Amino acid sequence: MSRSPSLPDRPTLELDPEMSPSERLDALREHYARLVDVNEKLTDQIDAARAKQESLGEDVDSLQRENETLKSAARYIATVEEVTDDEVVLKQHGNNQEVLTETVPRIQEEVEAGDRVAINDSFAIQSVLSTETDARAQAMEVDASPEVTYEDIGGLDEQILEVREAVEQPLLDPEQFETVGVEPPAGVLLYGPPGTGKTMLAKAVANETDATFIKMAGSELVQKFIGEGARLVRDLFELASEREPAVIFIDEIDAIASKRTDSKTSGDAEVQRTMMQLLSEMDGFDERGEIRIIAATNRFDMLDRAILRPGRFDRLIEVPVPELEGRKRILDIHTESMPLADDLDLEAVAELADGFSGAEIASLATEAGMFAIRDDRTTVEMADFEAAHEKIDVGGDDGSGPSIAFQ
Ligand SMILES: Nc1ncnc2c1ncn2[C@@H]1O[C@H](COP(=O)(O)OP(=O)(O)OP(=O)(O)O)[C@@H](O)[C@H]1O
Image (cartoon, rainbow, N blue to C red; front, side, top):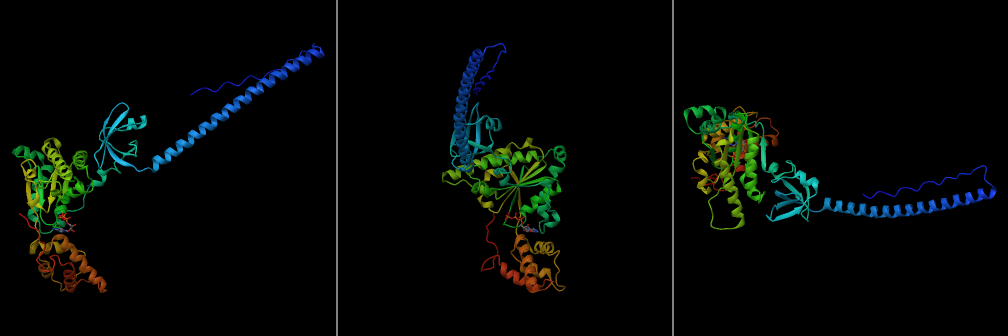
């Protein structure tokens, strides 16, 4: 910055008492001339300062306007690919376009490759996204201590045993597997119709092993977070290793691991990349420590067999719609806190619920309760369950139950 010119000294008047009147007059005239000179200089300086102030004021206005525009302008999300001395390579989400952009030093120090940032129309980085606003946070459900227990799950005793063996044991007692010299299953795949308790099983095992439950839905990866699937899968495993012991639960895995189709659309390529990332994460799994992976699907027939190879999802557990005994148990669980009429026969309700999934039995109980409330009663009767059954009607007109084909 240029320094402002120094102020002229104030002239001093020195009058000698010995001076004659004419000498005094001359001295006074000289002093007056010096004062006029200083005054002129100061006036010039004031004018210059005013002009400068005006020009600075214009700069401030223009910066303020720019700031407002930056704040209100549309912002896009991009991922930092590379950071050089004064430039950053960005990849925009959505169109995957790569751009090279200059940054101010403050941002330059803040960003590193892999960060997600908000950019404006001119690709200038506005801010670095925090984890909260990050898609990573939106794409994953993280539960440090899920509340579901095995006792909350009805009709799946065999499946619970298998899950305990394949997921719980390796987490709680990895040495046992080493001593016996067997590899625990790398991943467990739960398959069966919707609402049969697959998510509950994964949550219960996380609860039992004091592990963090981290869920990601395959369908969201391909529908909501387009262009980010592979990265989010990488983030998923990274987060799990930060939080171990952890149970990773990938719901609707068919969305990212379905059989290859012939079409070569960019959407397919993106899904392929996401699946390849998942496979490579699983293949490098040995060093990962206390992390177990569970996936779920209700489209087993659609799955790409590559994910079922040894070292990947190599333990398959079928979770079917419950049989009569299971339905009875699920009804017990979901009516536990309901005041039931003395003569209500839950066995008969379980028979009525033929073809119902666990989720449908849960809503059958809730609906029956609603009918009792509507009727201003405090106990739930058989007629309520019958009315609820009619309302839910899972199988459509023919009453044949959900018609999903399984292998
Ligand atoms: N076996 C079961 N025992 C008790 N409740 C169950 C059972 N299965 C399902 N439910 C009830 O249904 C709800 C949904 O179940 P869950 O999310 O585990 O099903 P899912 O198989 O993961 O379904 P989806 O395939 O649709 O993700 C549970 O919160 C629970 O209330």
